[in-house]
Image (tube, rainbow, N blue to C red; front, side, top):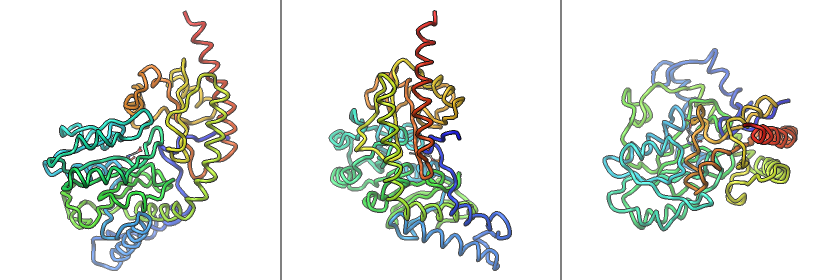
Length: 376
Ligand code: PLP
């Protein structure tokens, strides 16, 4: 059995999501914006999903905006909230946030060596021109959890007119986002990171926060996101979210133990391997290592051959592997950042998968190091 250790890139569909979706991929259909009975049934399914998402995210149903994934929800949050004002975000955000900020001349806030946003620098960056501040709840590469409450406190004090956005895409499988993001005005989630289908997400827009649409058209989602609803996807996302919340504490305990065994075993079994970020600050499924003397690209190739699916960091950056902007922002030198290995566990990870990784990673690293020594 191969080991799938890339759940932060995407995690398998949960059975609850598949079951909820199947009727909407077959005998049930209808455009929820229509008026006949088939359309009304589709509308009812979307409304029920909205209730479920609101419950899972600690929001009002009217605050949920369905989107075509996390990237779109992040874009809607930043571009929609900016309204000509300045965007501010941390240097370790996902590109979906970072590129919105960079492309509009926004400001970036550094993180410390542990990957935590520097609150003093945030304080110094804010002024009355700032319209939106985005700090992710948990990072997609190293898994570090940000002190969002403190971020909100600084923003309310220094830039009271600004909205706070948090990208909770990687947090939702592991953390009580309803509680931890309660102070944020805008919250992004993406279904395929918690057992829903790919290409569906949601943005919480709390309490009627002002937001200009980014996608224009038929005025669905109360004018905030036009386009015909992806009924099957939305229904699947809601079922996955409900299952995630119901099982979260058990999953965190079980998978956290697996992750600890994996990380401890690799640090002990691979000479020179260093864990990135303090484990106490990270989500339960995240194991990130730097392995000196080994290039991520070669490591991932040989691990794949050995039946271990892993990653170097963000899936969006695959191709020629540039050193990760997250690791560089944490002050890790580029040559060390090129030796990154991200093993991310998920809701269905097993002990057998961890055993395989513990057996194969040291072997593959030793092989690569040996090749490097004999090369001319
Ligand atoms: N934000 C974070 C933190 C992510 O990890 C991802 C996906 O990797 C996204 C946003 C983008 O989400 P999606 O793949 O649904 O567009």
